[in-house]
Image (cartoon, rainbow, N blue to C red; front, side, top):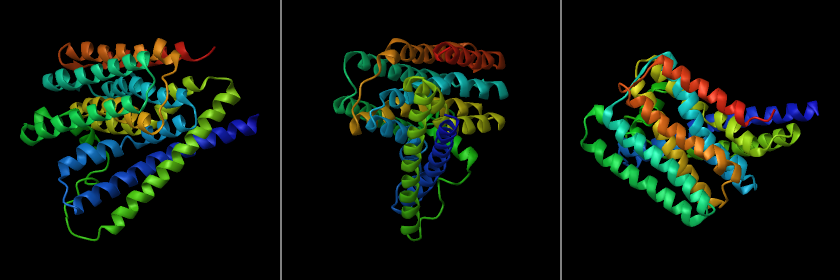
Length: 332
């Protein structure tokens, strides 16, 4: 039993490392390729970078759904959104109070809440089939269209959450995305992107294998593993980018990064997963965790509305809320 658990831990750890490294290679290669093809840096940031930085969650959910593990597939999406708000945003606020723009809160925060309600509501009514997947992806495309149109004419203080997600990534790896030169061979970055995608796919398979094996060995449901270990693991890039943004006093970017990530999780990852491998939302997620996702999305709007900032005590309350959530769902 001990050897099997060690193997599962190694699969989980190795899968996460490959997902993160492969995702970064994919983002760099795809962004450079698009630059050489004449795509604007803004459009690259809102589309390729937005989706590219979410590839750990995307590949994991698709792989789990293809494997017949909806608890991991959907738990990863819902659990990531809960962890993003309570754990990651809470940690960022503990490091530096987060200032919040009124327009960003009203627009992006409301869309995140509406997306959470939409996702859970659909889950009650029907399985996540390809029609639902198309609806979710179309909703993300519509949001990105309006975000792109706004960025083309807005002041810097009015950046969308999708743009802040790009900015947060650039805090960690400056200049990795918006390559200055538009000359050079297209083949090296294209090969890099393909290699990154291959690494991500392998990482997703290892992570799901480890998660399923760990759940069976420990006698814990796959849904709980998906909501906690897998969700937090695939959200590590958001944790790193938000913490660095907070430490550099770019707290508004930290908030936008979380809101943007949650939008990509529900509309993009949920939609693509449903398109590739239709599945149903597990009843236990509908009955509790999906409602928690809605409540914490609403709580974020309420907390942020008080003075348009998230203070350190409020950050501590968010982190404490995540500890309580894990305690409640984790089997005794």
